[in-house]
Image (cartoon, rainbow, N blue to C red; front, side, top):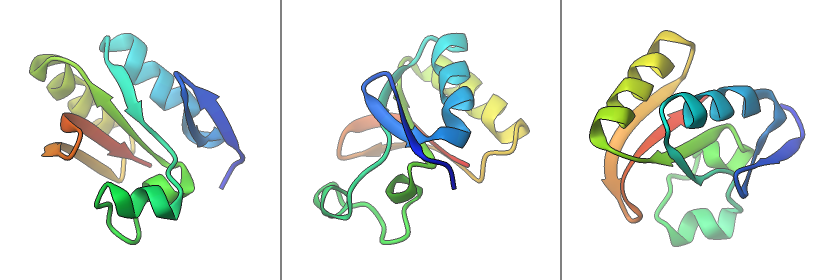
Length: 97
């Protein structure tokens, strides 16, 4: 795992910053989540082994079409998890590496 680095107001494992930036810029999506503390993860109902705890997951919001396009790219480019779901923060794209 890399060190945490900041992008778009959130922190991520430095090894995934380029993917997060690429998705946000290419698909015009807003980054809505990144690294979480264990306490924050519990507050939002995150699973105990969430990739957010290590900073290796990012959440994005935007139009359904843009989220679908970004999800397709992520699936083709090594993401471990790609979900578009309606969680506590509303409909968003979750990608983990």
